[in-house]
Length: 230
Image 1 (spheres, rainbow, N blue to C red):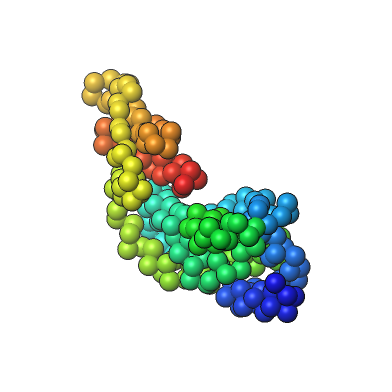
Image 2: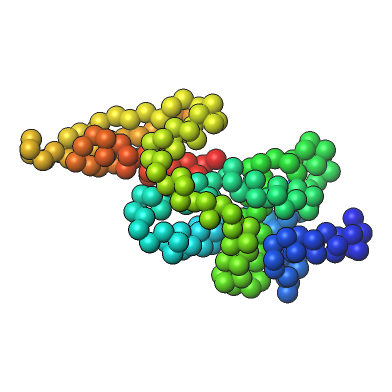
């Protein structure tokens, strides 16, 4: 790809992001798959994942002052799960900018949702290195504006329902809930429940004054793990 074409593509992506890079090499790195070079997106993805989680959590905290911790967590999980990130990446035409080995592009890797989600996080990491967390926050607010505005509408859906939908969407078995033990006196029991998704080899535990509450807390914890695993 000629330098002129590459520059024009970079400018288009910068316009979509709302950030002009001082060091465009960071953007190039964020867009480079391991098949396209050793200096690839993976380290920047690590940073971008953390920054995205923080920025979205802060926005939700400010936007929904009456929301509970569980409601905020569910909203955050929905906003930063891989499906949402790949949708955002597609909306800004991220696939056209990826730097892949010839074999990988021929296999359609530039349109793979999981890769698009990872690269979007890497680009946010690159923005953070280039301009700081505030610059990354501007980009996140720009790209997720409509989704953030609509975030409150899904807050009523409980953790068990969201986890079940996520598993069903990937054609996996439904999450399983098992009572590990019941602690405390008969009049004030504390249930300890394990939640697991076999295909992902994940499990979590939750504690509550009723089995339902314990299951809900375990599902909430597994939702966080689920997002990292897919």
